[in-house]
Image (cartoon, rainbow, N blue to C red; front, side, top):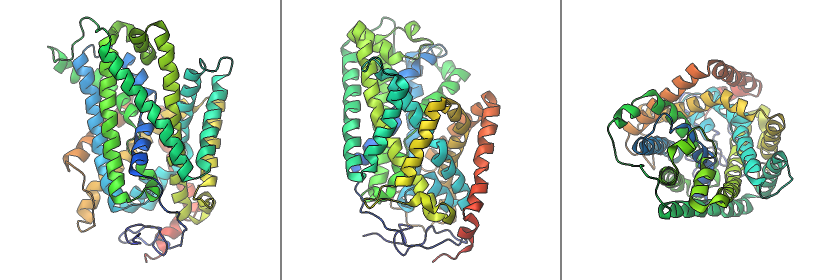
Length: 465
């Protein structure tokens, strides 16, 4: 049974609770949680594994011509992602409610800050990656469906996946699991085949003279930014906490097991790419997966790998289509002016939020501006994740007596590592893309107008029950 003191926004419970902050109280109908631990793990894996791991190595080998340095790069990225997962797990177990950063930042710092994070996620934070993954699907799948435009394939995936999730959580869970299993099997088969294939002469994964210099240089730091982008999505299950059975246990487990599984897959995949393909053949190339597939399976192997990558992107889009609207719903539940966004069907589907996300992703695909949008919001997304991790430290200091069913492993070192790497990434984005970053922050801050116009001030002024 749910406990209103632990599960904000359950019947007769306050929307949010925060010392010194007054919030609304409302009765909201909830459907019974339907998401199992296995499905929650698959959501994390599917959200993380997209095209990044199959495309980024070609831009890393010119500056890091060392198998050892590259594997360390991907292991470090995985450790940082795990550090973030540990911190989000503590917050999700202590403050279990759907919404991700929107809920955490509202609870720990201020509802206005949480709204800015939610505003970013609800508008383009999920829609842009959905459009990007859908276009990747269209590009890779055009070989399977000759004569059809990649754009039409992309649009079909967005709306087809949205339609499935519109039918409800049970069917959406089943579809998502069936879409994720082939992806995992494909990656596992690719890794096994790569280990059995002939080895590229001269490649070594043992440390060599000069590796330390490479790993402390600018090329390593720049590559880490793109590696972390490939690892993004490790926090996926925190957006649907209310739909997960026994969330105090299963959300932390899903974050840890999902992220750990992806870490192992990413390191193994990059080891295979390096093992079977000469570095000069990958340098500067984006289609690393296809190139490696051709070396393993022959000329036709590259096309087969491309087709399998396209099928794997179905689950990536599915996970984001599923999780994104839950942020919008949480905002609609809290802000009177956005109540329309919280409307659900009888089976608990957030129909307005789901449709809105599909429309935004469609507009981005039709205008071709989703990559520009990613440049604009990337700094804000990293900043909100860093603030959320910082919230673990703030909450431990401010509320030491708060019930914490799970405590972040390695605290305070894990949050410190995440914050340091986030700081490096923010510095890189500001120095390399200053105008895009500033424009993105300005766009995010414009959300304050929506916040106050939608009743944000009233949320602060009403008494906590």
